[in-house]
Image 1 (tube, helix red, strand yellow):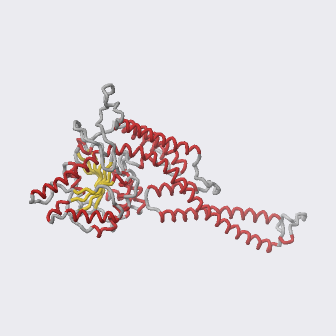
Image 2 (tube, one colour; image 1 turned 90 degrees about the horizontal axis):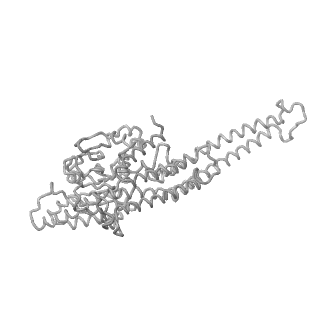
Image 3 (spheres, one colour; image 1 turned 90 degrees about the vertical axis):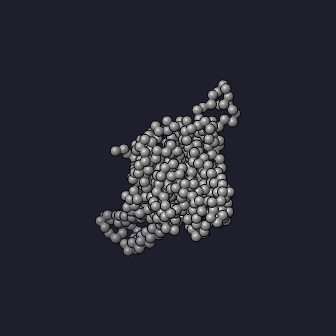
Length: 517
């Protein structure tokens, strides 16, 4: 068996071996994550068995979220070109399904434990997180997750996640935690709503979680909001009214910009008798579907920039957010301990005065008498014994106070913060800083100093260098790469990725998956 540290090293080595076949820049990024881990371990932000590199997804990942019967599984089946997921008007699956390329192995369904035990997937050791929700939930990982493989070439080098229907009112805590975990790791999040239910106001809590809690994220551009099954509005010819109702509902949650796609599946669509109306619906559907598919095609490029960007963001986050927050928590904890120590000191003073009165120390010590050490009422032997016991008792109560103050501050922190990776990091660092052997007088976080500061600066510089390398791979502003003297690399030219544009398709490229080389 590997120790915790050796297990992480083994996993990172395996990751590097995989990335060597795909992208040398990301192999170098693993080295920078190792440097970042040293900072995290010395400051207590990470446990010995944790790594920043294992808390992100190294595979391009698309997650499909949405309300019940919004057509999520039908969309995935149509995109893959096979009936992989069960579909229906009611909730047909209450598990998160991770779909990956199966190659010659075809289509298979595997239990959730296959994901929990494999570090290559985004749910590695997720049973530990489920156990934090409720005791025993970690052993029931198969009730939350499953893994499916597909021979579709559109999945080569990508992972798609189909989620159960979302309802914030009745959703279990474990399911909400898994949903947040998926959102954090994904390069693209497709959020589906059902056009057949044009009363979005009735699902306020669901909209708040899927929209209100995501639009202010720094990676908010990865969210794509889709109004599905728009063909049903053709019966009344009122698509504008339906779309307007949903847009107003989303605006109330703060979403006032960005694309809002309207689609439906042509294979299960209702028949539209009017030719002009049908052409209008089909034109809008095909246009929006093409843009969504282009976003899916571009996740490989977005993944590379996400991983290198996460390096710089994490380094800045440690310096600018975690360090001040740890200092603040330590100051709060120190204040509580000081108050307790002052109370204990006052209590000891009262006891000392009472004992001095009772033992007759008011008349002073009689050091010259031969029985001063034999237990007379006013001798120094009793004084030494009392001082020794008092010191021992004070030290015992001091460390009890440290532990009590630690639990109280952690309780306040958990009450004021949302469950997740950020809370875990702060809690780990705070517990690390308040261990018994760390001085209460130290104000700065343990492990924070010039050495770790320089490490973070090295990580930031490396991250910027990786981005430049990626830009050289995917862009050619000077035109040098396409000149006759310098043949262009064997990679499709891609446009910069932003909120509305994605990887530009190369007409001469037949392979749907474009790996970064």
